[in-house]
Image 1: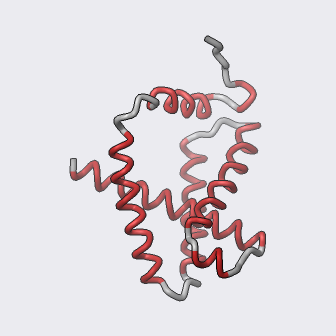
Image 2: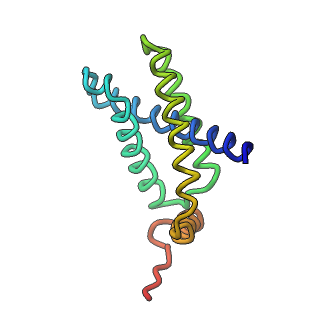
Length: 141
């Protein structure tokens, strides 16, 4: 149980910093640097999800989303995060925020394992890994 909690915490940590790295990158491209973006760190996360969604959909038009593609995306996101993290003035405050976020997210992740929708989401992920966007079989029941 403890090893599962720690491994899930590490996975959530790397996933969060990768998504936040893309968010910081997207915000810098759009030139949205202002006090609201700097104060609310979850805006970076939302912009990261938007950018990753755009990248994922465009890539999935032509290729299946493989494990290699996912690892490369996470690696680039971590690199973006490190680049932008070195520019942050109040690093300790941001580290506390990330640790708290990872702890709370891990707690809710264990709680979410009790839901019945695991099979649906798992099949969706398998379809995106096997097929391109236009080749996914659609079953109407």
